[in-house]
Image (cartoon, rainbow, N blue to C red):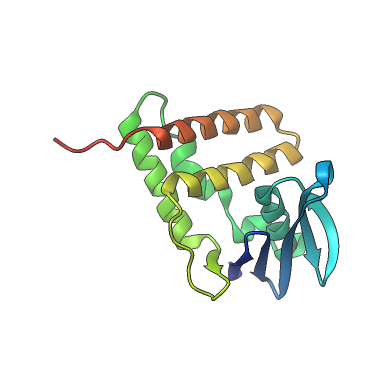
Length: 172
């Protein structure tokens, strides 16, 4: 079963994930070199992560415990990322299509992101959405000890970021 998950962006330094029968708050704490994102469950800090993406990954893992199918139930990463992971090197048209396919799949199955008033967040590019998911996948690979695979994902992230910087081409 795919639980309904919703991100609430309260402020730039406070984000809450609602779903799986709980609310998990992410709060940025600025403490010099110890700055980072605290992950709070029931008002208690469970862990601090250096980046928002790492904290979001942690929150997703907490929202869907392993005994309920784990994060893979909420975010079947391999299925979602398959088009971009299989995109051949050097085929820019195919790569562009793969980015669009993954972004569309994310829009259909990714946790909804809303602002403080509960309105859907707009303005995220396809590349930004794909980079976020690739980052979550790479983090998971690192935690599993699959360092070579994680390096491959990092290289793919560089390719997506480079693609995002290219000027838009118009059809002739």
